[in-house]
Amino acid sequence: MEVLHPRLINTYHLQSRMNTKTWWYNGNRGEYTRNVTLPYLAETCRKESRSIRVNLHILHPDNEIVCKTYTEYRNNLSDLDEDIIKEKTIQDLLATIVAAYLWKEEQPYLDIKVYLKNNFSPIRIEMSDSMVIITREDPRDPAIVYQHSSLFYNIYNFDLAQGVKQDIPLDMTIPFVKRSKLTNKKIKELLTSIKITPNITDDDLNKIKELSITKTTPYVPGISSFIRTKNNG
Image: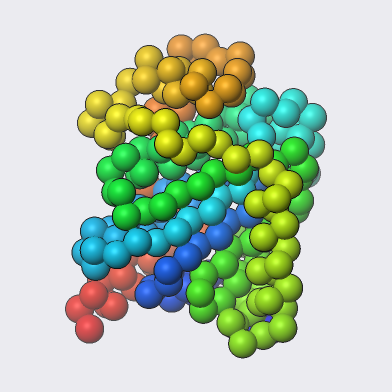
């Protein structure tokens, strides 16, 4: 087991994504996955002409209780700069779903499956072929890493596999549009097709569209320079 300082989380995430054939995320809103992990994996698929299988497990945006529970938990974390409201949680969840369909459409080698959870956990699990990284909501908290050779890697692998059996899968065969053609109408049509029915306004749709194509990281800056260093050998 390794305990990581928050400054190292980006570095380990990047190392974990390199050369992997699978990626698992089991968490809450999936913000980091949406903004950083999926773009990176899609680019890897494009450059290396190979498939990567991705399983995303996020909170069910139609479950009022679980979204409220998560929002209250997050707002009770003393070190975060600002509170959020339940509507922001739902916007983020819907943006992660939309982003998954966008990347599926733009990069066929990215084999994405999305599952919706009706339970909340304070920890997030991200696993590649080489390691599993455990984080909490506050990006200033340390992370825990287990390498592939660890017994606990196998335990978390088993735990994630149980989620596939219990969580609600989305139909990822539904065709969608590419990023340049994304509109509020297309977002609404997608949500209807996958039977998600949140009470959202035009302002919500504008925000979901914006969030679904944003590429930012909640962790300490430095990932871009690390990528450049790796790419330059």
